[in-house]
Amino acid sequence: MTTTPTPRQRLAGRRALVTGSTSGIGRAVAEALAHEGATVVVSGRNEAEGAAVVDAITAAGGAAHFIAADLAEGTAAVEQLAQAAAQAAQGPIDLLVNNAAQLIPAQSLLDVDETLLDRALAVNVKAPALLTKAVVPGMLEIGGAIVNMGSINGSVGMAVASLYGATKAAIHSLTASWAAELAGKNIRVNAIAPGPTMTPANAAAHDMLRQLTTGQPDGRPGTGEEVAAAVVFLASDEAAHIHGVILPVDGGYLAAR
Ligand SMILES: NC(=O)c1ccc[n+]([C@@H]2O[C@H](COP(=O)([O-])OP(=O)(O)OC[C@H]3O[C@@H](n4cnc5c(N)ncnc54)[C@H](OP(=O)(O)O)[C@@H]3O)[C@@H](O)[C@H]2O)c1
Image (cartoon, rainbow, N blue to C red; front, top):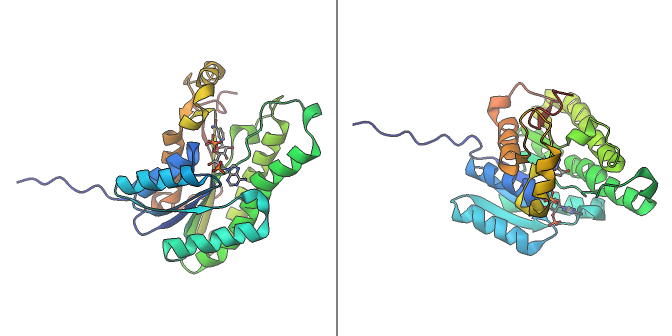
């Protein structure tokens, strides 16, 4: 008699914190990590959406907890999130996905004001830096992985996305420097650079994303699940010798420029 082997869960026993996982790409990442056996701490500001993600993960047989946090609120809020996440996951976080971001509508540099500049830097750059600083000490004992969410806008100039692109370029740079600093300490740091990606959260813009991507090699936007699959790989032991990459998940856009 032949038996079907149980699929191996690549992240069994891991404790993950995913920022901005109440919706969009972050939600897909949280669900994929849980599917691979990680205990996942879902985070964001929207408690109802956070609870819905936890319910979906639990209903699928995974383990998840929600911790509300506003990443624009600075050091105390971020440190509190790190602490509460470790408590909920019953041990130090060994997988951090810095995904949350302040998305910025297309705009000219002439329309960027100081308030928007401060907010974008606070959520997209300062918060991941502070959160990583708060989580790494717990990872030093046990090893771990950090996956940052960059963007093709971090590598390519785009006329209407200077501020957003600058925050994503900062994420790419932090990824390289953190990888160099932490590789010898059994912590791997990598990033994903998605191209235009359709998620339930941006459903109203799907037609626009389709139009935007007709000229790229595979001719279509990505999905949250496709980005999540890349996060799972970079987080897993299959990527044990991979440090500091900015992995495009962009349908070939960057390759063909
Ligand atoms: N979709 C794309 O086409 C695309 C392309 C390239 C890169 N990306 C990157 O992928 C990541 C996810 O994007 P997405 O499209 O999934 O966006 P999204 O659906 O708008 O999700 C953004 C997430 O960030 C959280 N967030 C925003 N501000 C926050 C704050 N102040 N404190 C805590 N959480 C906050 C939101 O949660 P709450 O509302 O609950 O706070 C939400 O869960 C971002 O880093 C984005 O730059 C997206």
